[in-house]
Image 1 (spheres, each protein chain N blue to C red):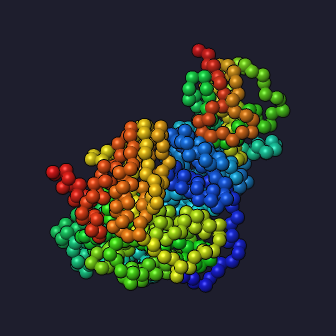
Image 2 (cartoon, rainbow over the protein chains, first blue to last red):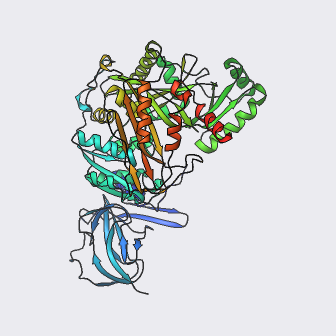
Image 3 (tube, helix red, strand yellow):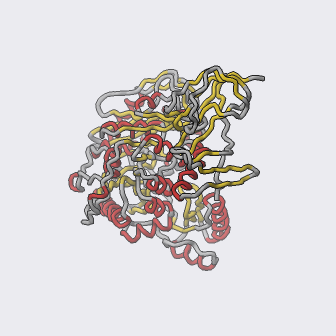
Length: 142
Length: 463
């Protein structure tokens, strides 16, 4: 039997949907020394699930561009956040979310791989984006 | 044919958006059928295909993963998510990729969408060669001599089965297909070693050591029968095709109807196929593949999907098979009865592959110039154009050239002209091979067997 690939966001999303349907609070899976944890945040309307530790880096397909790691609906901010999108340019630390991809019940953060400056948001809030679509312009800092 | 069991109006599925989970010419073919039916389309693609111009024809064109098929076109979860994101009501798998994956059919329907293909159960039955053979025997479909049961471990019992069938026999993996997981046994001396080696191959390649044994036919032709079924107990067959021109089990040229086979010989076989469909509750389109030797038909497998070569049957029957497949998935009763199905004239299809015509190595790269033939009776199904980049990641099929004429002889002439009018520059293609085959006397005579092309190629390389 083939091993489930938990590095694939689609697998996570599918799993999250199954958990949601089953009414389970969350799950933690450990495989090959890596851990994936999906937890429920039921107090946040419309955002039931959030992937806490998924090794799906944002994709830098060309210098200064950050692409979507999977297909979904682009959200420039966490839907639970009441703050408006911060003005650009914006200094961000490594690992900080630049935005989110919403796929059904899960919200996948698109994180900065390195410290740098977010200079432009290309995708529109609420737009359907595909894998590899350019979301941001980003200037990494050495 | 009808079995009189109308399952009720609740089987009408009113989807208005179809997700096309495939690429290339078949994705474009399905898109056109959807548009003709007034349906919206979502076409998913891999990173390698995101620049494909045909994507612009879809209402939504969505990249779902990297170039690797396993991460995109074979990624069931990514396809289901794309369906969910776009509000698609149905998934058309095309051919290849997930088209004959029972788990995919089930998952699509569990997700609340319609799988434009058979149920998971039908796919699973036909994917298991022993179960398929049992179902065929029950419906009176002629099968290759040999028991419809798994080969036992006991040596003496295996020897008895082989003797009963008569040498040469062929040992096949129950979960195999496409020419893999099989071994010919010419005499008793090689029996046990062949069984042991094939069993181990089957265990490793297909996850199951189950084998079965059949008579090995030495000079068969590959003849297939196209069926179309709805979910109300109606089923018809749309004619037959000859796909004997093969290299390494890959079809190169297909034609309809199969030449030289009398209607009263193939008719009862086709009627048995329709009966089998009704017995297993089959829905949508499917193809029964047979070996044909010395006037006898022997079932080999059923393809539970749309086939690459469906256009030749469309040309001779006048029925749009892809539209019919989609309408069947919508729960619409068949609008054709068997008596109204006709076979008009003769059609050929050439598969144009991006490959070296001598070595058959795949040829990726950019098409720098493209000239396609046109005129009465000529059809080209392709997604490529000048400037299109042929990806190294997928199957080498870049187009299909189809001709239709009143007779086989006229269709051969039409195909020669069409091939002469086809030019593709920038990459290698098998066009030179196709042109030579249509000038070959043996092929022109009709009725060549499945080994003909391999022998022809050997003679060519020897000379």
